[in-house]
Length: 447
Image (tube, rainbow, N blue to C red; front, side):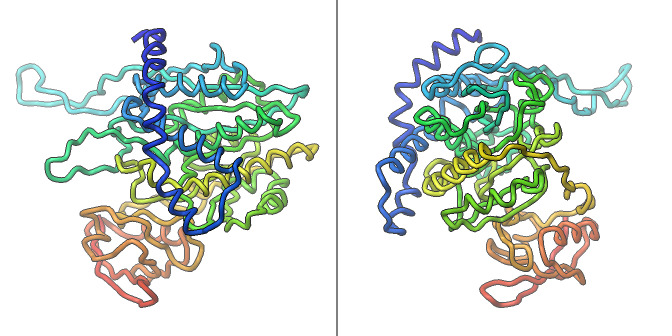
């Protein structure tokens, strides 16, 4: 479909989607506010209303899960373009607001049919087509040479690509839209709220690039493309702040990656925590989101994340489950950080240890659980249990805290990951865990 046709279609559906977008989200946020019994100011209410609307638009069925290269992703990109214009940003791509890229996926190895009429088969590479995607880039320019980048990816898994964790049951269809409310409509909504505030009153005297990346779910395609073909000189970018999955804050916990990428971060991260959030700090600049692309170019980064959940990469990652007060707190926090950076003359870059390479060996087995990355006490707390996998078969539940596997004491996430490297598929070991303050054990057969 030609771009003009998609743009026409996008305009046609925006009006009809707007009301539905707002209606489809907000219940979790409202319940949380009633529980806290702390009335919001008018400005806070407006911020939440805007973020609800932005999330609601991105998760609409017309967006078809926003898989990079599809009609739905193009529609989402055009919508994001319109929102950047509304927020007073100017074009900063290589084609207006768009920064185009083409990626040809690595072909998979397949078994091909008989050769020469004989009962023999051979291996060959699957045919793949180039995927065309685009980032959406809007600038807030000032009388400054230096730049900061505020980013979030707007793509997701469409009807469920190779990264989907959805397993249909019974008569359920395999192909279901993955709306990606938390991943990452939430991050886009926070980015746009910062852009809205910047239009009202500049966040900083520096230039700011607001970047909606595509292809993140495929392997950081969009952010890697930008760093390879930047529309802003990389040497002029002082910092990058990234939002990915920031919509499911539990209590007041927030994971902040990248605090070791510059010596200015620790003090600033602490001083801006005026709301008293429980910050889980990770100094590494490397992680599974777009900040990594900038860190690898020698740019100090911060990345915000509110944790995994059972709906991750499934059709059930829906807008009604988002914590909008949590998103508001993250927005306020980020605004303070950006203002604080404005007062710092230099933001030096510091390389950090890549824990995924240096501390975690390769492993052959899995417990079949989703760890709780926000948990900081002793052990590895389970945030989700996958059906039919070793943990479920052994009777383990969400909330269980694994403290021992065979003879290995599990004290944190790193020791848990290291422990998995010690076992083989089919091996049965005793796993000890804490449930409701009671120490329990189960025989687990690894797969």
